[in-house]
Structure formats: C-alpha cells, structure tokens
Image (tube, rainbow, N blue to C red; front, side):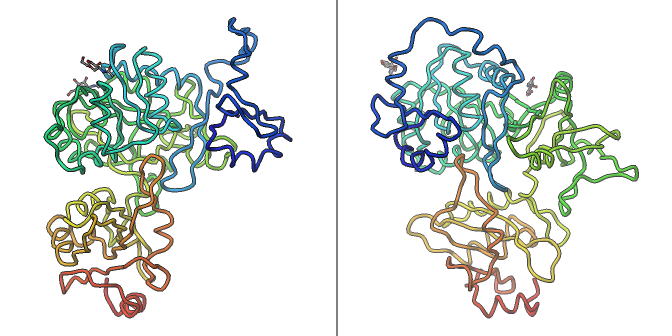
Length: 466
Ligand SMILES: *[C@@H]1O[C@H](CO)[C@@H](O)[C@H](O)[C@H]1NC(C)=O
Ligand SMILES: CC(=O)N[C@H]1CO[C@H](CO)[C@@H](O)[C@@H]1O
C-alpha cells in the first residue's frame, strides 16, 4: 500500500493487521518516522533504472484486474468494482474519440478514485500524450481562473460541477478562456444550454457509462441533452436493450413466458447489456451477492444473462439516446411516476433555493411514496413558503410536488457530488425525530406551513388527506 502523509494516522491504526497479512506500507514521501512504514522516496532512489523483468507480469493478461474502483454509493454503500486491463485500455481512447489531441492541456478536477478522473482523464492523457493539470478538489470559484492560468483547452465535468459553474455570479471575463472541449456525463439539458450561453462555444462530449457496466454510449456531437446515438456498430460492440420496467416493484416487466419486453421508440425503460465473452461483467470484489443482483437472467431467451445497469433510458426516432433517471431515483405516488431529478430542477428555479435533493418517503396507509425534498437555501435567505409553492404549481402536476420540505445547512453528497438519499428516505418526515426545519405543503392554503406535531399526527391518522 502506498499512502499519502495525510492518511498516515488512519493507516497506523490498522498497521498490525496489515503486517499480519504480509502487506508492506509505503509513505509517499522522502522520510518517515513510523516503525513499520517505509518511505517510497528512498525506495525509488535505491531502485535500479533498468527495465523490469517481464516475468514479473507473466501472469497478467488483458482480463486480469488492473484496479478496483468504488461505485459512488448514491443508493447504497459503495461497492468495489473490478476494472480489468481491457477496460483501462478501452477507456484510454475516449479522449481521442472526443477530438482531444497531444497539444491539448487537460484539466482534471474530479477525484482520481473514480472512472471519469482516472480512466478518461489520467489514463486518457497518457494515451494522447498531452499535458494534465491536476487539481486536488473541484472549486467552482477557482475554475475559470485555473483555466486561464494554465491555458486549459479540455475540461472534465459531471452534471453537478457544470451546474455549480453556472450558479456562480456572472463575470465580464466569463468567455475569456481557451477551453474548447468538455468531456463528462450527467448534465441536464437546461444546464447544458446555460453553460454554452454563458461560457461560449465549447464542444460538449457527453457520455454514458458505468464503471462496472458492459455498455456505454458517447455522442461527441453538440445535440443538447443527448448521451449518445446508437448506430449499427454500437449494437455489435455492446449488445444492449432497453426493456419495460415496473417502477413500483422496481423490477423488469415480464410476459406470460417470463421473458422481458423491449420498449418501443421514445419509451423509457431499463438499460441492460448482454453479458458475452467480449462484453463481460466481472462484478464487485468480495461481494458475490451484489454482483448477482446486477445480473439479470432469462431476458429474451431462457438462460441468457444481462448486466442490469440500474439506469432508465430512452431512445428517440433518430436513434438519439437520452438518460432518464436511476432506478430508485424515480418513485411512484398515486399511480404516477415522479422523476426526482426533474423535480429537483424545478425546485432550483425557486429564488431562495440553492440546491435540492428530492426523494420519496413512505406514509402509513398509502401505496407508493410521497415526494419530499431536502433543500439548501441561498446564503442569507429565508424559505419562501408562498413563492416555492407557486413555482412548483406552475411547472409540476400535484402528485409530483414535494409535500414535505426539509431545510438543511448543507446537503450530503458523495465524493463525486451525487446526492445521498438513503438516510433521508429512512428518516422520513417525523418532526419529533428530525431537527432540521420541516415544512408541509398545504394545498388549500397554497403555501408551505411549518410541519407541527399536530399536522404530523393528522397525516398519520389520515385526518389530513394527502
Ligand atoms: C499560456 O499561453 C500564453 C500565450 O500563448 C503564454 O504566454 C503563457 O506562458 C502560457 N501559460 C502557461 C502556464 O503555459
Ligand atoms: C458516435 C455517434 O453515433 N455520433 C453521432 C452523434 O450524433 C450525430 C448527429 O447529430 C451523428 O452525426 C454522429 O455520428
């Protein structure tokens, strides 16, 4: 194990256990005072510079594990996905596909422990042979200054970071930069448009892929909102399908023979990728149960096997692919599907709200889940009970409007800025258990009112009809 100095304390705690397993620990530095930890600076200085013997890697081939990458853990605990050399190698070409050259200066501000920053960013730059500018942590306020200072020409993003950039106060020099390409995933159409309006003509290479998945799309054109376009080749490289999915039961719809049903054009469904020799799904390390969960059998014929992406997508008449939602991010209320990302987008149009995390909670005596949102207010702003209600009413049907609002000082996100929901869902809307201010949408009054214990009681006893 090679560790950074700032992680030394954490590793020292488990040093005896590591020793027992015969694991050598190196500190990334020139000196180290802890017994049992060596420093890699000295080891490197002592090492020979002649090529290593090929015998050291004689048992490594294209399908062996190159590294593990933890999934980001939005809907559960992170899982360590196996990443093979083949995947690393294949990912290294994404920059080239997006038009990045060896002359470019590539800005990585996403964590290197995820696929985007490491595989597409760092490994891709090794393939291209271009310059990398690494930043320890994404900073919206420093972003464009960094780009100007280092002459950045290619940037990476995830949907959230583009939104953070768009949320920064406008500046006269917003278009004063050399960025010509942005590569990433998960940007919503409205943010994409705003980003281009504000920061100039930047070619957005939006792609769709899961670290552990066996299917991916990329569209390096400029059609806003699209994650890819399918052509004859994509079906050959990644045999995939989009199948009908039951949001309530959170499982694929099956016909009388027990097989899945492909969706029609423009219909939202679950993306599945056929597991074959060329499109394997290797799963998660030490977690056969989770691996099994992502395998879907008897899809089109008895005995076949697919990778369940857990993502809902749609393909239109021109074969453009659109990302819709993650399974679990869409919930059902009153027989209607509510896409949490769409509701969150509307909430963020409300003047006082900076960020929103939308989810569904159970209410006793009701089917499905009712909408709730944790929101972070803009600095110095109060929650506007009337305006929030009227903005939501303008854009959303009643069933999709969050009936409960929870005000938080900050919203909990994963290392890649994905909103964490599991804990919030569990905590529900009980004011005796939750410290944060809670509000209830009182439809007749057309405003949010503080959620008192009386209101909570009346909801549970069904005196208030939801
Ligand atoms: C950025 O480009 C300018 C103009 O071409 C050049 O003068 C400057 O040295 C460059 N900066 C870096 C950090 O390479
Ligand atoms: C990879 C791919 O299929 N790219 C397509 C994206 O969409 C444009 C149309 O706007 C096609 O021309 C590209 O071939």
